[in-house]
Structures are given as C-alpha cells and as structure tokens.
Length: 138
Image (tube, rainbow, N blue to C red; front, top):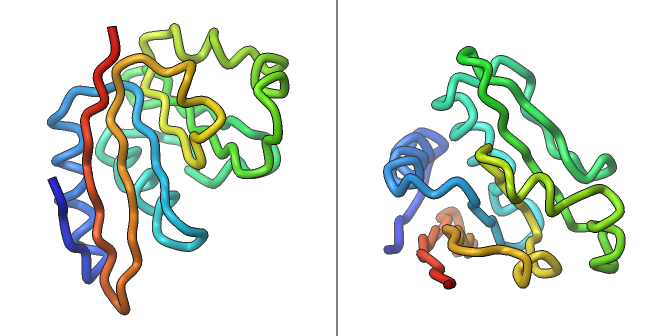
C-alpha cells in the first residue's frame, strides 16, 4: 500500500493504517529527514505514550511507557556498524518481548526480524510517499 503525505496532519492517517495492521515490529527506512521519527512520534501518541519521544541516535534504543504501562522500544540504528554492537545491547531480548519495536535504519537487523511491517519513505518535492509492506517469515 502506498500513501502520499503532503502535510503533517496526513501522518495521523498513516499512523492509523500502521496500527490497524497489528504488527508489533515495524521498520522505518528512507533518507535522512524524510519523516521516520516524526511518524514514530505520531504512532506513539496514538498508543498513549506518556514520555517525550525523541530519536535515540546516540543511545541506539529508547524505551517509552504508555498510560497503560505498556512498553514501546524505539531503535535508531543509523550509527551501528556491526551486528555484534546490537547483540551487545541485547537486541534479541527486545525483539522477543511482546512490546512494540519501532526500528529506524533497520538494515543490519533485518535478518533477526521475523514477520514485521516495513514502512518506507520516498521524498518527492513537497510530498512523502510512504509504502507499507507486510514481510512474512516462518
């Protein structure tokens, strides 16, 4: 499915589509500044996250809590060079949990993911074309 976003208000609808898929592992790809973190902020708001949602560029993973005490993990793997770095932070533990895992720059982690939703951003002038693809394994 492809969605065209011309305004930040459109991200609300995109977040609804994503949450309606019921996928807990969601990857976000696209060039720098395309809107990955912004969309994760909108999704988190819809999940009633009570924490401030920011990009975990240096910490690699942020943990957020919802009003219902559910946990959401937000990864930014842009600076990660090896799978060993991810193993050192216990990435398998996060992926095996029942929590939402939203992963920016997932290229290194793709082999560790089971079934997940891939969200891809393409910037075209003032529009964002957002593709949603269900990836099934197993």
